[in-house]
Image 1 (cartoon, helix red, strand yellow):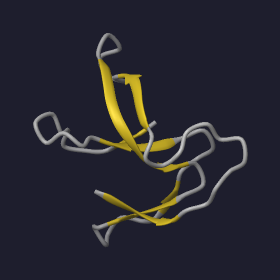
Image 2 (spheres, helix red, strand yellow; image 1 turned 30 degrees about the horizontal axis):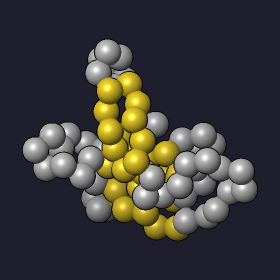
Image 3 (cartoon, one colour; image 1 turned 135 degrees about the vertical axis):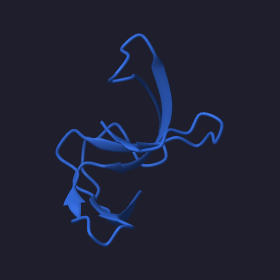
Length: 79
């Protein structure tokens, strides 16, 4: 799991933290996924595992989470 450490707003961005997005699963392109945006480009992510290094989301990327425990994946995804 990763936690959002720092947030920056980018002018012109059309996706915001808290938005719900639909996208094709990167492994099975015929399957659509519905997720909540947890972080957007430029935000720094910090793992709860101290061995992982912090990283910043690249331009055009966002971090999404699954809110439904019945279908929750084992890992979060970066789009």
